[in-house]
Length: 282
Ligand code: WA2
Image (cartoon, rainbow, N blue to C red; front, side, top):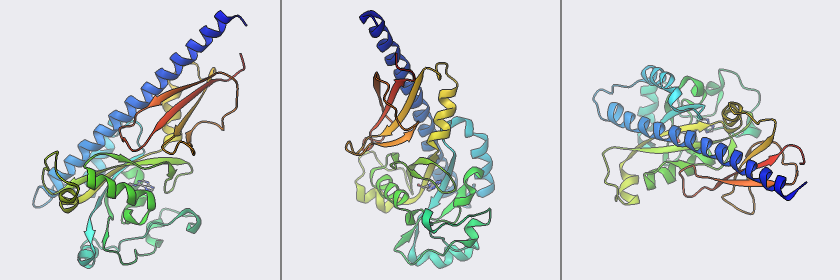
């Protein structure tokens, strides 16, 4: 192969990869902005009105009709902050008990009655039971999101920072592949941007979260583009550079030329990259 052809191939790979990375990042950013707007909606119409103007039915209808605004998400939900002293009254008012999240190894084959068969959450200082959900993630209603490691870390970081935060990739409930969860805290008042973490934690009333089913949604996005036959795309969480986690794409096969495009999903604590290769050795 001439040096000329090789540099043309390299240039092609760089362009295709950067274009895909930019598309994915843009769609992620758009989705994130709309999840943020949902957090403000809940703050305004659930916590800001007496009686609340939002119930499960309203939330389900509104989130279904605006799903097109959050192209990479598989569902959104709202978890309320409940301290232990309020648990009994909360459970009586809702007519269900706060459930513990089940990890994969504890989970036999589940059906639509899943949450009714989950164990009640053991006693904790506070809980984050899901009270509203988009229909697509109805299976998480009544589950204490603080009882799942990744969700809990997200909740604690979201409320202390006031920013949208991301988990590392993990297997979402009732899903067969890896995804990530995005969380925004909801506060009981409009906090100034320089509020301290302590002020934020005290003012927290709940958590608006979205799940990103990465493999199926990235697949859908890349499918809209030509050249699927030409290049292999992988997406990695490279937060821990010694242990990159593959979020999307096949187990990498080495076909020579590789290009890495940077991805920014808006959470400075997490690092992501897109890796592109030619399918055939050129
Ligand atoms: N949403 C959907 N599937 C999940 C999940 C989740 N978390 N966690 C595990 N599988 C209500 O941050 C608050 C959503 C959590 C928000």
